[in-house]
Image (cartoon, rainbow, N blue to C red):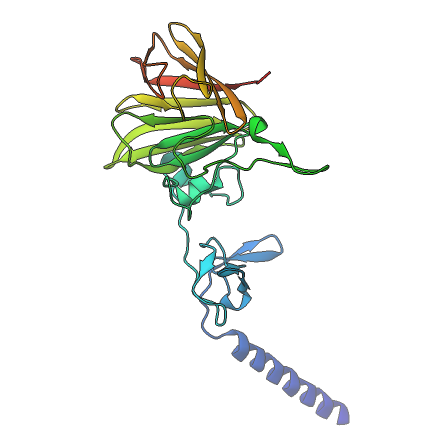
Length: 291
């Protein structure tokens, strides 16, 4: 008899615990959960997990893919989501947030002169800033400076300019374009520029290789340098389809070789704005070693 009473008592306790758990966890849920291995992935960040740092502003953390700045520290301001800038094949794939081209896929173009969007992509050995005017390119090795016995950094001079050290590739007819990630693989990323809904040009960057491949569909490509032919810029090679440009600005020396597919005209090669014209609209830019 006593055993039956104990069993009944334990049953009631278990029922009460189960009921309390049900009440605790069966409230409204705002997250979608996807089973993944032995756990799950939520499609929503828990606001109770936000972190915030106060350092000449308020900077949020642990909040997903958002702009870093918020309006207040306590309470933590509402984060501003960042949405992917994707088209074509890239829009059909999951988008990583930690790749060397991540600023392109989540910010698109970096407006010249805009210090709120100053990121560069790093298809080493080239570093590049995608802008509304095209792309600025420099060689990483040329800019590295030893800061102490164990580290070297590349402090980019005039980082918000369309061009300074190195070169910039733009378009003769369009200078207020939007940029999106068109496609990517383990080692490549393709940027696409549009204006007024029309595709203007594309560039494919290759990580670990000194090449960038351009296709231009409207207008003509234009290569810009900081200076015309001076001690800061010179032409070291010219043929029917190839032009070699050397730049030396702010102590950073770069050699670039531009090759067009088919007969290519390089207008005003001694200037700081070289128009590149051919019928294919295809060009390759190579960063060469500096002796």
